[in-house]
Image (cartoon, rainbow over all chains, first blue to last red; front, top):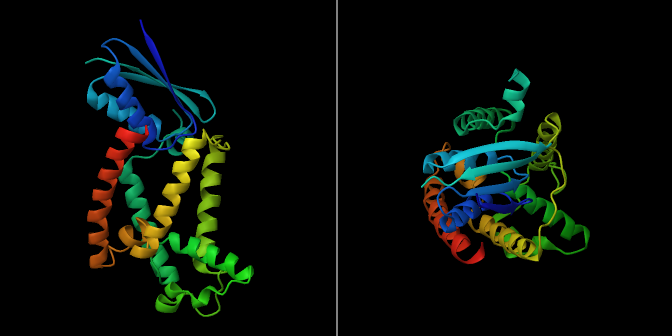
Length: 75
Length: 172
């Protein structure tokens, strides 16, 4: 399974979401996008947005105030 | 998930934030006689610093035409807006510390720095043309029945739409 990494550290809204949107357009169905972020808005707006788009999404808090978001492109 | 986690760790839904901000703004208007605004405190900070450097900003067109809008007994460094600005920073600090999310954001690269500075200058200049940001000229203006809040709102959305198109196509 192909994984794509997206470094969104030190970036604020709406950059992480727009970056994810742009990256997902170039990916094939079933591929995974891993985003690293330290912006707590991202774990709300990226997650809500990806769900609305119909992708599979999950996230974990790696350290305090740092997250990894996983998106599997579903369509 | 315990209460502390739900209350402090998870970002609140937008509607909860909206209601809380609305109530706080009423409280602020009731206690200080002025609705919430932010960018004028930056104006005071800049004006105060330039004044300290010996530059007579009171001669500037902006201040000559519109005045400083400081209340009697207030100075550039000591006024209700400055206290609000400091309080906002302390409040944000406290909420980050409560959930151990405090961290110094690094500058990612030169590109981010350049666009952040450019954006900051454009925003600062814009707030003086429109007498406020999305707080003073929009969030506080509309409940005050000021027509300029609606005009600000319409063009803010137009600007945000154009800005995000440019951001997506050329900058990201």
